[in-house]
Length: 77
Image (cartoon, rainbow, N blue to C red; front, side, top):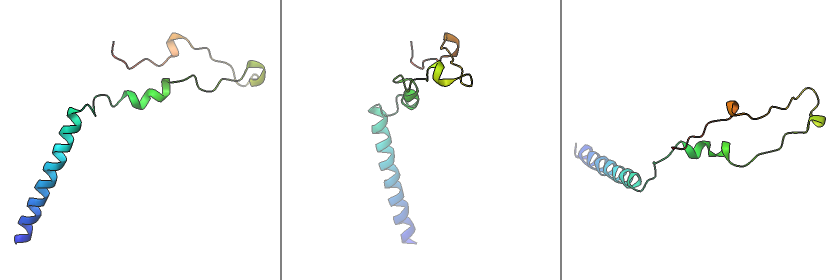
């Protein structure tokens, strides 16, 4: 029966330690913006160039970028 009290005490200490680490990370700004870094790869760089119309042939038409088909920015204004 004493073992269960020891295990409860250890689990409470462990939970308090994890809670301390979580609040310390929260205070340092670790979780400020979790969405933008995940999609940043979609917007950085120009990526590979599309083949020229003569190389692509009729099967691969070139799509021009317009304002209507661009992905909107997630940055706050």
